[in-house]
Image 1 (cartoon, rainbow, N blue to C red):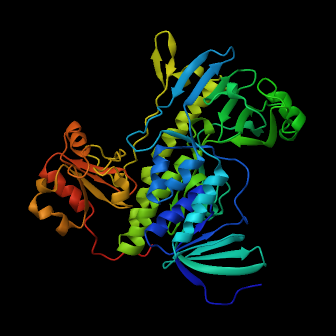
Image 2: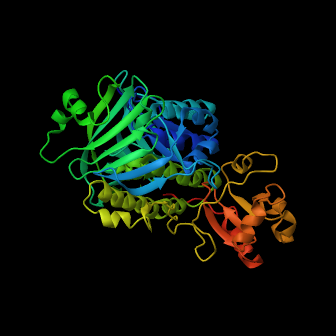
Image 3: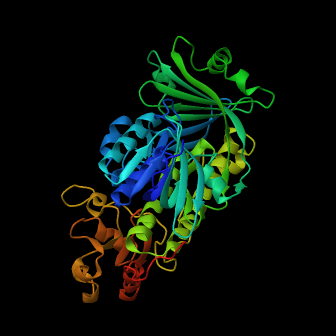
Length: 502
């Protein structure tokens, strides 16, 4: 049945309400952007999928006001150890148990359905954000004024269409939006079948430990992951001559798990064979259609950065969409999204592939070279977050493309809570600003060393007088003198021109 009424009009339609789509919708809600989320499924998928996120992701969840609801549902991870076939440690990737400069811990374990429930419930706070489940998008037609989005309401078979200024595909590896963009995929070469097994312990097994363990055994590489509560996960390589369906049968699953646990220890929650891929979409934008999350990139899970990358996509994209839609910025601003995010995500995927070479024992030495060799000790791995690609960064200025710290205010609160999802200029004191750049005239949010005592030492450490931080907490550039400070201010002076048509 075709709905003959005039189509509703939105600023943004998001296809897919997984963690990335729901985070993007919350950020757009924060920005006052009229948003519709269309999701094919009726409810949150009930089984585990992603199990890890990092300090930067928690900072995004803080930005959308949901970190307090998410923290109690997580546990801190002490890190990951890589062991050879004899149990000797090859690589030590321990994580600190104290907060990082982001203001949060470096590694969290979580149960994805719990996270999705919090993110989806958060959408109810925004009157201009609408979520429709059981809606299957099948056509996207864009013109110079917007996109016609056609979908079927699977609850009643009704065909409906809406109009949107932009459509964001958060619709996963088989993305419909990517097909309409017509993007090919760059293949980084890693494709392996792994059996993913989730269990619920029936009795205490403290001996399994809290560390994630990578068993780098050439006979059968495997991964162990401690989950929240009684949840435990094993990921076990499927050998070339094995049938994917047969290897996932309970009898075979328990045979593979027998070196760690038995049916007396745990109940099987899920066993399924997945092919881990390493691919990046060549085009993340075509006019008014854009991609985020797994629709734009897929990574082997060995770094735990799959969902994290999608959350970063959302944080990078939402404020740019809001600037174009609500503030009159030129639509070319959206081109900086791929140019910034694609090199960042590629670097993480390439490192995940190198670690995969350690795990599957096909390229151990090359993988270990990613860490720091130590005498009479395992190689130590510390992963530095990549820089943003060129995009909007004032690249000849200090710290461009780096993440900014989150400073604690003098009253004990977190700096991001004061700043919100906006630009901020970090300075030692408002009194040090030239009069022509006074806060009241520039309209730029200030955070000073008078309000957060850590700002002054940080500025001095980097030999700068100010740093311009974007809504996604990346540094646009820093200034060593008044002339460079002028450039920072000019970079976000509100535009006076009209946005372009496309």
